[in-house]
Image (tube, rainbow, N blue to C red; front, side, top):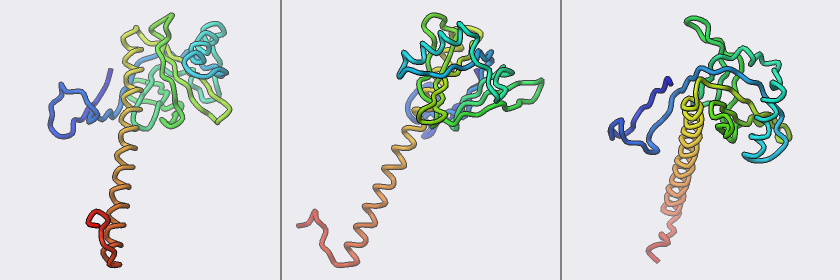
Length: 183
């Protein structure tokens, strides 16, 4: 696993908390294909993986069948073909369009996730890794990216609220309106 972690606040590398920012994870995989996910939730992903295993999965127009590496970073998931010393990006799926990263329970070396192409069209992409440890690491990497993005959004919302309250207080002071907490 190629992972770069940056710690904020100088707490050291051994501590795991929300201040860990994942820049990129890259994993060697073999692309199995995708299937249209018809059911909701984890059960839908499991059913789609079963369909991919039975039919060999659909190979799509994005040339993802040449994928031998998957990269997970704070923007999303990239299907990549690695050739010698350069990477050729085959397809990119933004983080906002991904849900349900899952390690397949019947074969733990398979990792899959849902790609929401549109509100009514969901594709489940599956890759097979060298072993079950790598599949779990892909799942954890996707979770870490989701977590980082989620907490980043919460921080932004709090900052906006803080700025809004400060502007309200400034306006009240300028207009001569007494502060509410002094009344």
